[in-house]
Image (cartoon, helix red, strand yellow):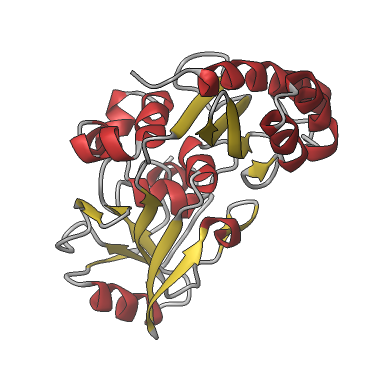
Length: 281
């Protein structure tokens, strides 16, 4: 199947991209295109205008700014995985990226595209939530920053307006006492996860503090398991697993029932708890 007809424009700057979006009520941005092209070909999306942002300078950079790591919207997954800055200072993202699709997808797909598309079964939105990261947005009124907790609004719905461009994400640089963990269960490697879990914590002696558990594949957005977080910080793993029944309410879908997903969430929590307890090499 081929996409419906559309116009094409190549933005040279962020302001240019915003201006192009404002000219059309149903324009779409083109970055890596790994989700967009598929929806166009299946005619699930029929924009009148595609605004290509791949020529905008600076959006493909990864930089450390003080205590923050900034990853530009056009940074490809493969580029981020090869970045010493990401591997050293944002290791949770580096841990998650190999689970995203296959090499061809990671070579073209972008960090910004994954966050903006906000697929509830995607890895990076959950990582951003677990890291308490920020999303940098360029809009008609200039630049603004939105916390990850406020960015994901619903199924494929975010804080991005119709004329907004996701510019970058920012996450805290990992401290010496930081602990991170990631796990997911999928039918085949590269498939969307049945259930996944991105986790961060801070080592406090032999215990954990500031535990953040961000599940994906269990709801319309990434979901924090707050009662499980508190139990895990107390060192009560069994209580944490039991608390998931209050934290999560996975819907049935074509892959599994909600009950199975809840069970798998507990399996992942036990695996992740073991990872969090290990001191980094």
